[in-house]
Structures are given as structure tokens and as C-alpha cells.
Image 1: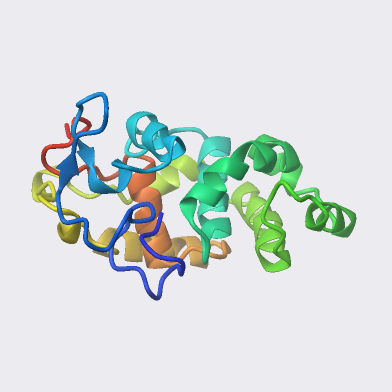
Image 2 (image 1 turned 180 degrees about the vertical axis):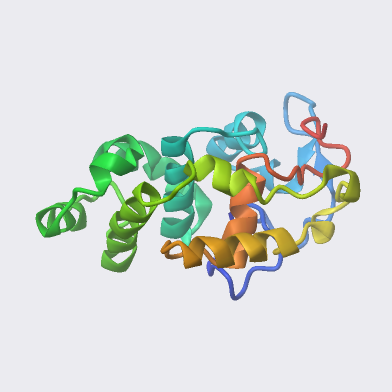
Length: 214
């Protein structure tokens, strides 16, 4: 996820769209009085639910991980909120992100997807998703296991105290990006991979004071 509109260039931290540049608090209290990471406070309800129920929760499963990688790619240059709101349409358009099904999509499917107003209609991203599905099928290890193999040693991590302490990349995300690219996947830069690590619970970047911090 991203604090700005552009992936891998303007991003400073790896989290959803920042509510405002002046927001300095590590966590704040929404109407239910539970303190949360600053980006989830005062945000759209979609962000609130995503923060509370998904972001940082360990995710397993090939289709689930393929979905997350695909949506991170589609988010490039857009807000994560846009992707969240389009996610049901994405799931419908891409057969629940079953890589075995998506890998069989052809040019007719690309044309169909380009005409689907429910998703992000970007040919490069659509074609990359089809390409990545085929790359996933060629892996000699399940996709989720491959992604999780880059989990850092938790004893060497310190919980971020403020949003400014949240990194945009890490040695592990850089290594993951290199390996995924070597295996043929596209739209998997180090910053995107760190966002993936945050989203699927490989790293826990809920800030100090957030009720989700564990």
C-alpha cells in the first residue's frame, strides 16, 4: 500500500494513503475509542475495516497470495482505497484469482477485461497478471511458501513508534523482489514487495499504541 499516488518512486512509507501530511501521531482514537495507526484514523470505513481485520494478519494460500500480489500491482499509481472498493469486481473478473484459470486467459479475455468498468482497465497490468499466473504455475514451490520464505527474524525487528519509522523497503523485500523477478513475475519491485509483506503479516508495522500491535 502507499502513502502517495505513485508506487516505488514517491513513496516514503509503506502504508495506505495518508490522511494528511500533518498527521504525526502514531495512533489516534476513532469513535469506538480503540487507538489505531494514523492512516486508519479519520479514513473511509473501508480503510478502518481493512486495518482492523486484514492488514498485518498472516495470510496463506496460493490463490490468496496471488490475489494480493496482483492487487498490489494494479494499485501502482492509484490509491489503495480505489483497489479495496474494486476488489469484489477484480475477484469476479479474475476467477477468484485462481492462477490455473487466469493462466488460460487469452487475448479475448484481455479485451473483455479492458471493457470491465469494475476493475482498473490497464492493459499492461492486466497482461502482467496473466503472465504472473503462468509464472506461478511454473514454480517448484507454492507461491505463499516462497513469499513467506523471506520473513525476517522477528527478534531483530523493533516496532515502529511513529509512521515516520515505518520503512518503505527492507533487505528481505529487496531479496524477494529479485527472486520473484528471477522466476518470471512482473510488477514486483522492492517497495511493492515490502507492502506485500506488511499486508500479509510477514512483518507487523502497526505502530506503538495501535490496538492491533501485538
